[in-house]
Length: 520
Image (tube, rainbow, N blue to C red; front, side, top):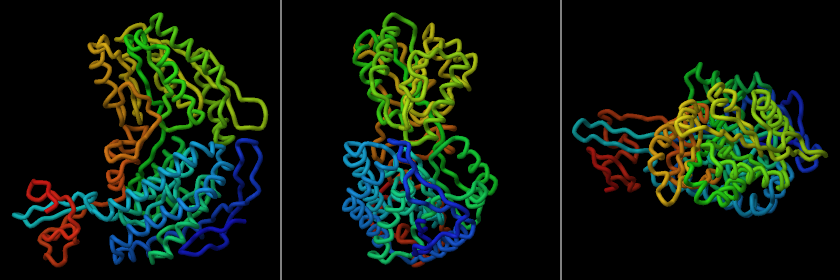
């Protein structure tokens, strides 16, 4: 049985049972046993996290940044082992996905987090010299990160974006490993332990548990020693945990569900329909459709070009080999979503069934409904079919398409494709007006599957895409604000102020001083 990391020590879990991950390329269980932690493990981890939070108040910003950079370097040096583990547990390709894209991104965002911590500008210092009132964001306390199944590196509970943001803001992290890749997460915890040792950080800075009972997971989220939660996962499980956090007034930053609507305006299909088929299919089937930003719903106005576009998508979906899904549970969930949509009246143009054999796989699936059908039951037809499936909504007119957009739930992304010759320009404002405030990121003539690690990126959106529309899970330094509290210092003596609010500004941070942004 694998050990848990609690308060700086790898020790046997006080477990209530065990579980094994599955190799999705074969459907076979991986031999390693991982513990299901009892409340005793969780309780000890919460105590250690609280002690680490107190100790962090005496840790310099340079030491904190050094930990993040050291951890990043250790990950880079351990690339071969990490990629091998993640490939076995998730079936994601070694190259380019894991080794050439996701691992470098993970290393980069940890280093960006170190830079942001060192600078201090992320804390948005504000100084009113006349009133002698000063404010900035400061660390909030122990954070628990629930990692998703689809990004074993970049969103991992002990290496991904939530982890980097929480640590850089000055908080200890308890990582709840995703059950699909516990071995990968354990390896990250081992490397984090090495980085803690090398940089002299508090031993409870990073801790790891693999799984708990539902009751203990809810108890963890509601515990007073935990300050905030970062969660990426299923909508139902996320809402159950969010209800607990809301009851005690605790920030719960959840990424839950998104169909990421894409609108193809008529002129774009007339102008470059075949090219758009290629572009869409590449995006829709990338990673077997297992991206948070997978374009799972297309909206078109009925026309000969729209029919040709749909035929092209169906042909390519049928010709492409179905990718490997992350787990049996993803395969089962996809099948249930497709069944629900077809029972509601969606026409099945392609796929719709599990692939034969032991591999976790589902046939590439294309579903179609009319705009009238969508308007008759928009809630059901926005069911997320996470994986290699798409629902195409064919509207009779632009007015019907715009009416459909008015019934959309919140999404991470929304895309509008329009003609380059300007023939769609008169239609664009009505579509963009309805779509923009229902998504966190609006794109033009570009598929949504890439989420750049940029300070301008928003990987968030209105509910149910996330629990809080004003925050992003990607894009340092903005993502750090989630794990911080705003603290005001009113008439506090200069020598007692944090360095970010001192007149001398020793870190040269950007600050708002009497209404003017300056780093003087």
